[in-house]
Length: 398
Image (spheres, one colour):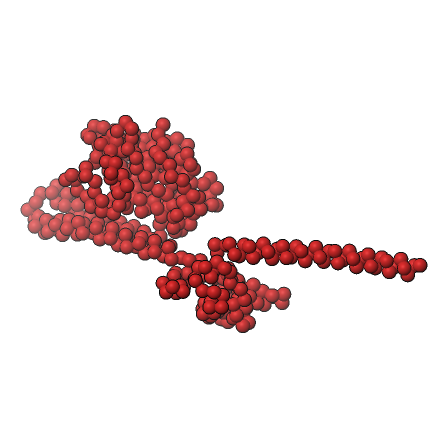
């Protein structure tokens, strides 16, 4: 009898163990199903490569959609990914922890023939013995970002050229005047020196700020939260305030500090205020406002009392080289507003314009802002390192 009890207990224990194993198997299958679902619908192209054989163990459907090849045709890519693998493992074993995870950029032909710029992030994963066994990573298409960066560099080169040409003319003229000014009085020579100093300063600013490399860097690195928006707006208002165009500043709810490129923001405000003063009749005020935006972030608005923007020109006013019908004989190359929007784009912001019901135009700067300085915020279609999607909104006035 005791044997029967023991046998029954053993059978019951075995059955219970089988139930547990079945439950674990079902969970594993469910997990596998979820993983497959995730892999099939993921926008990131995941892959796994065996370190010993450099064989591509797995590549997700997203990668096949991205490159146009099926899994069997991606062996060439696997060879590229494993080209420096032995050296990488050797350096990791030698204590170089930077080899654990790497980001590399490469050119890869799509199956239809066009070239793609790819960013490949890969991580070495150890086995139970602590040795690198698999290389796990993600492939992303960086073609759009590369194209935008190249367009930005072309813009910076064009802008630098547009500014240098008239400055070179002024520089040459003032040098000739100084050479022939032996009989000029001291106030005249002093004015010549001031002009020469101003030209040299502008050329230095172009070298420092408007070079393709400098423009490409705006918005690509996290700026310190060290720019006081209140002080930024006050300085801009003071610079343009005059009897001809009194500038009124109204602010509310601005944060103490804002993350942005200070020179870029000063340039944007200068362009907008200069534009407002140029198109506003003498004696009429210009208003500068700053406050939190209704959709999140911050908004700075420049409001004038001029003729406004013709409705058929609103969609083109920020185009490169565009000069509105109201420009007349005013000097300009049609680059100011284009440049202002370009700088805001790389900040993750936006620049829009609307005509005011009471007359005049309202130019609105929108900038991302988060009270949590550990996060980066910007519009989703921007090339900067931010994440907040900006919704289109009109000008908000109180």
